[in-house]
Figure 1 (cartoon, rainbow, N blue to C red):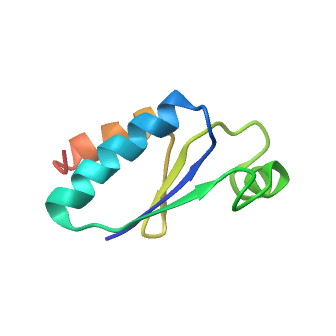
Figure 2: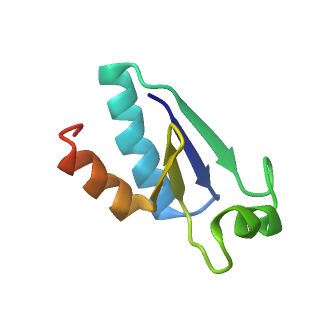
Length: 82
């Protein structure tokens, strides 16, 4: 199981989800790949992938799009991963 996270600098929700996933990774050995706006992708590429008006962060687990910070934490709690 692995996580891909699309983030941007200065986003408190991005910081929070990276903290949550880093702790999960440390305890369960799940790799995390972070892509940062302006370094790894453009806003246009982000909107093309996730839809116009999508917010940061966006989290993908394996091939499943989990959504933003709140949706991801909710999913992890419901599936007893947190």
